[in-house]
Length: 315
Image (cartoon, rainbow, N blue to C red):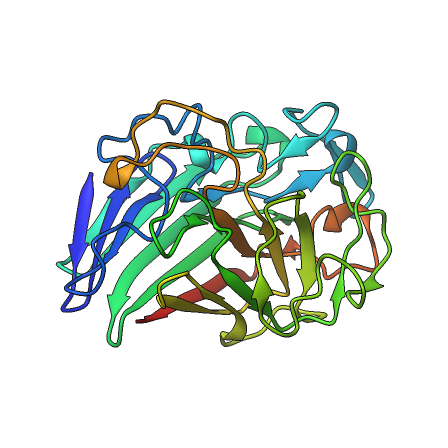
């Protein structure tokens, strides 16, 4: 495992999945701000996806298929008939290689060969975790390919800013007027709907509900941005707060309703349970390859993909 440290933050990174396994505000709060374990246990079961880089195309692809130009790609299914987070062998299962490490940053990489996971192209993925000034964690993901392919990775931590058993004491604000309604399989129906009078209206801060499931994409923009902008603000019950800045056009909001009740020992002797953490995942819009009116996740061989997300904390 890898430990990073700055004057204000300390982070734990596991090479499997390039996973953020723990994050602490030094001299401010004693608990980890993300769900994780000290040893790396549980990431293949109770904590699957937690803190990992997921993809190559994050979220769900209907019927484990994706349109790429005139082709229909057939992908491995792992969520009923659908493909979730790159299938059973997604990026969260890779053992990422450490390319460069300093006291406060690390660069990890992994390669996907042509055809792996049903996607074309020899694809080189890199992620840089960096602890920056003023209590900021920066996550930069880059991808290059030698063939046109589909790319939309996401960082997937579960946040719990106050160290409590669930996130009922948290308040969330998301700067989004629209969201993508989902069907019974949590796949977008294709509609882009107003958040007004729905469970996804977080335009003004309000409590994170723990009496229902939230698991849908909030639409931040119609296209990816060149530079990160503030899109969400989360406050814990004791005043610890986080602002998310990202380049991505979507933010998947999942309130952790499906987290299992488990005896797995997390940081601070917590245990997994439903609603123990909230996932706020900057990414492309779900099922975009099958929805022509969604922002494209096509990466051409002449381009480089670059996603930047910054988490800024205050107490």
